[in-house]
Amino acid sequence: MPERKPRKDAVRNREAVLAAADGLFARRESPEDVTMADVAAAAGVGKGTLFRAFGDRTGLLRALYEARLEPVREAVEAGPPPLGPATPPARRVLAVLDALLRFKLDNRRLALALEEGGGGGLYGAGHYERWHGLLRGVLEQVPGLTADSGFTAHALLAAVRADLVEHLAGPAGVSRDELRAALAEFAARVLGADGPALEPDGVRAAGPR
Image 1 (cartoon, rainbow, N blue to C red):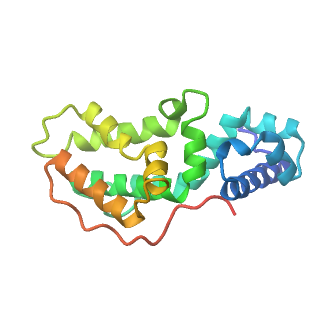
Image 2 (cartoon, rainbow, N blue to C red):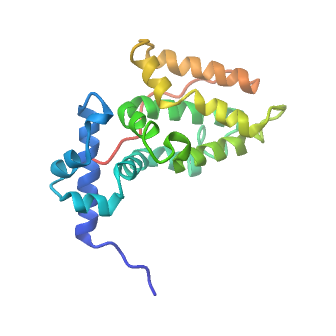
């Protein structure tokens, strides 16, 4: 049997919910201030519709996070250098980490809410497994790198954890440019590579609008 397409009203409801959640997380000071009831009211749908579509609050957070992250994922999987597959491995690792850092900076409250939430938190999220698997695979191609690629991928991803990014960009007052430069230097030392010329901080991943 052919796969059934979602009804148009279901698609509209999903888009409305994601847009409403996107706006709420951008405006609220703390991620915990946003409830499912808040999102349902802002989207103009019933709570039952919300739970049927996303399961729970963690499911909603993951859906919104994935929607915002999609441009980055596409660039890494099929885009040109410095993120795409044709990039030399050491440079690609550095570029991917920089892209993830910029994404976390642009989506601080949402990233923090998802990584501190239920369902396994950061390490239980599907996107973490994908990024870890990607970095591990690219690290295995870096000439002269003798460290365990799986552990190294975890260690590098720890440098862009949402709670660390929030602390550094918030209370510690570290600027965006300083964070990017520090991460590039750290990752380059781990890889035994030259530090990269960072990409212009222009196009950023965005959520549904």
